[in-house]
Image 1 (cartoon, rainbow, N blue to C red):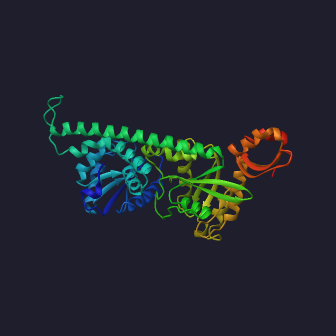
Image 2: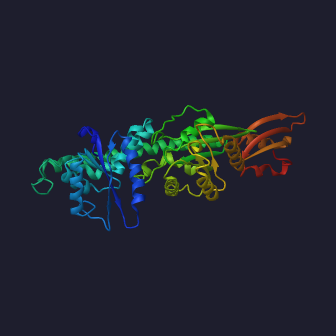
Image 3: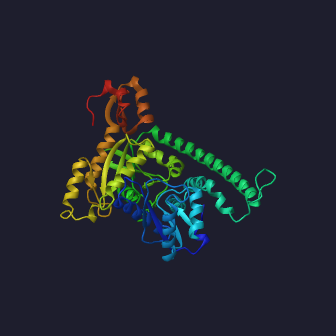
Length: 430
């Protein structure tokens, strides 16, 4: 992988967007605006972008050589320090562009990987990023050895210095990928064990999902007072954070904050972060957060659904929550509010900054939690001590008093699918 900042004092980045036949300039500009924000997060200054319309991709530069020469001239005129494409380049295309322009050339995927590397703090996140970067780097290793001569032909005993070193590096990198995969698998097993421990006394679980920087960590902090990282930056949270929420009336819920999504999320990251994203797959329901003030609101909704579908979580119960309601004007944005309420009739509108809408949100969370749990107040006869023991092992017991005849008055919550074990004793459900 190119370490752009390590090679040269990079400040100015020339952005290139690729438009296919079915994409408008407006759509491409929205994606380039997001790329510009990504670029700023790696301390680069994005220059005015260039959009290239393609009927079909070309092998050498992705576009025709004439258009490539035009862009190379623009890069030289604006004195850009690097070039960043808003699409994935093949290793050979990156090499060709670097020869043509004389500056480092990279793509959206590498920028996202760089941001993830900067944000990774825990052992698991560091391993996940390292795996994604290693898989990205493997086919691009030849870029690091292009200065060695390779004119001596092929053959195991007649390779150039660069070829011999390249084979060694590939072997080492493949070994590293295998080791990282094995370490992450071990962590995944440990996570599964921890999840089984939580399931012994089941509490409904909801996963907060959504585009990066929509306020997921802020919501978790506001609901629980938990000491979680809250920053106005892309991908501030890479590791899932689970916290318990007390909703009153003997109703509890575990909320899990997950990594944010982004358009064109590299597939290698989806694969590497499966152990993190699987929290969304295994949750009882999802809180899908959207930034109501975002100009790309619809695209962010579609991107979030695409990622949820890719990880197999799109069929979960989904509660849509529009955040940052304090950043819009109810009068000026009345049409937007009416349209969103029509499209998402059960959606909620909140502000994690001001607390607006939190009372209704907690009520909705209580309903969602109640759909998964049943709170029972029963009197169990002396010969059904097994049911008392089951309440302790599979549910949460709030009160348990034994009467003189040995029967037990017990108040407890249990998974809705399991409460049928007590149906012969149920008279009134709380």
